[in-house]
Length: 251
Image (tube, rainbow, N blue to C red):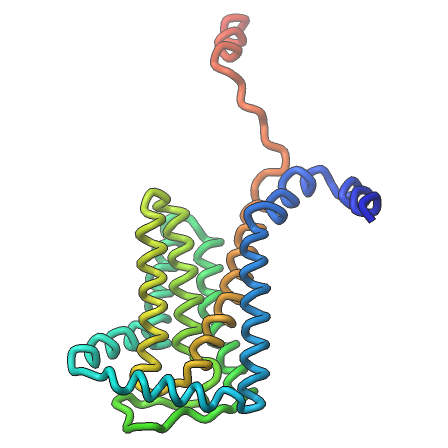
């Protein structure tokens, strides 16, 4: 088996061996693993939801969260839900995408657009496919439509804010910890707000995150491969300064 793998790799073009394979087998391996775990997690939750085996624990968790309601928390959770609205996410995508385009980062701007639009489309299809009713354990303070599973706020915010956070780290590397922490806090707050407001079951939110991770990793990996592919296959080796001066003197 090892010999077969060696022959396959040796048969690939030189550029693939020296650039694309290291890209896939090193840093990107973590992204692929995360996507695989997300896909597995979503499949497991979806199976449990279809068999209605999560109803009891979903209800118990929501009722427990209901006991925490307070006026200040109401405002905070409504704020988190607002920044997770599809229309708000669309505006943010357009604004950040325009900023990237102005900086000449067209592939990054296109990836953000595909990530956002793709997440919205996938979430709609999944909602229609599963057709799960929303919880109605108490009077809601926000209007909701469509089905419940998976949570659109959780899934789309994971993709959009995750992509934006990833791209910001590429441009502002020294702020990577602050950017990652802020992104995590924002996405987590959005998911919790949907539970607090009683418009989603807990498994809806967890499944939304799982599906979002799969699509997010797909978009990021596609961007990295594309950017690596677009780089010149044959890079000229820079001439040292002393050799440049010798060439100039000879002339």
